[in-house]
Image 1 (spheres, rainbow, N blue to C red):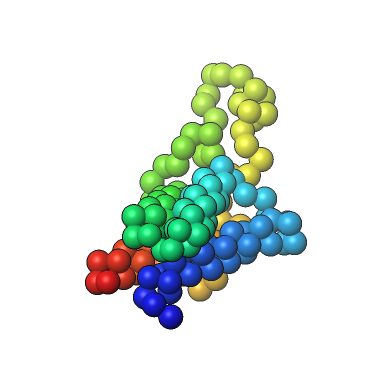
Image 2: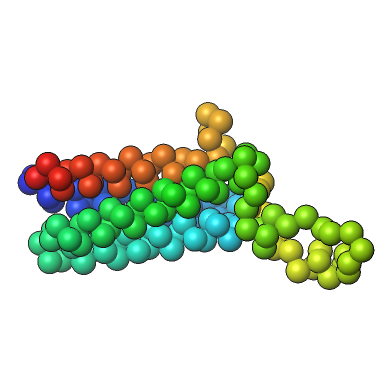
Length: 151
């Protein structure tokens, strides 16, 4: 298999497996996604769309590069999300906002999302799903860009 085809295949199979795993955790395992999880899914969908387009047009390097960059965006969101889960930094306020005193507490509680971005619902070997998403996306996206550079 040519290296371009192998790179394009990686940009199709890996994000499809990641998205499939996330959907399985949601619909089979009952783990509902938070807002940042959904962002990661959109980046995976963009990777798949660009990867399919690149494949359909004969693994065009520009489209493969865009798919790899979309996967790296997914990895960057995963790093940010994992950092929020570990409380290394604060996430977006819609996912992690604390209640402020002297305000309408009930309104704030009802306005909060059901799934918080700063909670770790599942982990393996000390890495959350967001952490694994980041590692895999960065490795495969980096591999794809490296293969394009060396081709």
